[in-house]
Image (cartoon, rainbow, N blue to C red; front, side, top):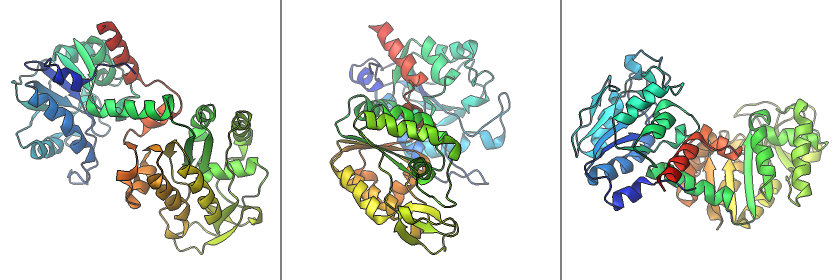
Length: 399
């Protein structure tokens, strides 16, 4: 995708002396006392900020935090803890500015944090008047928040329409490159793992991928629905019987292309959904009426792992079993280790997927880990994200 990249502007010397407005994703978890409990997103945003400072810009950064009510800034919605942590990471003061849409005083070589952007009336609805005010604050707008790339809001989309220059920051650019590598020009075979509790929440993803991937591995409740669609018994396992036709359509679409949706040949069952519930490995054809399927079996896991080892590209969204419980984690663990050992380019995203990656310590062996959540899912659905669209349009206008 052709967009202007902030890194290129810095290299070309076009940033010195400019006012740079960075839309970052600093939406970090906090405890009841407002203390940050996990700062990955803040640390990830430092690269873009330092790039701007080192290039001689006056730097403004903003982000949303939580779900504030527009027009009202409650103490728990303030970016004050983020400003403090950002100051520590940058090794310089980071002042927090409120009521900033009418103007911001910031000198070259300084960085200020602009209070929670979702407090501004009109932010969520992408109000043009608000977007123009934001654009007037800067010479260069940098979108570096992939987690918001699927939202057309004033600080993510509107400002990009009206700013003198609108470009992608290093985090957003990296997401664009990884997505293009995995989905637009993949090395074959392309294997996708899509797992979760319900087919309904990922039906559009399954349909979109079925037109492109060489193999579609399903897991969790989604796999149970596909097993049911294939005429197999699943006991009292979580499934969506009303979506069997949709599941069969995905299977048929894959089959027509010479691709496949592997159905488990063995499973791990229990009589109750509990960490201490005794686990039983059995053939998929032997599931009883009172069984809960909570993981794929070792035979299925090994067969899928072998296919992952032969893949050219792997897209991973969701664990294939209840990996939080030791008795039902083997399937997810085996596939995670196969992804880590595979020579394929791999891209992974989604909260549970990231938790599995962390649990099995394979972060450094996954080609790209997306932190976008909803944005990553929309990409898998085949949608063009608003941030990608507006940045590509602005780049075309600049040429």
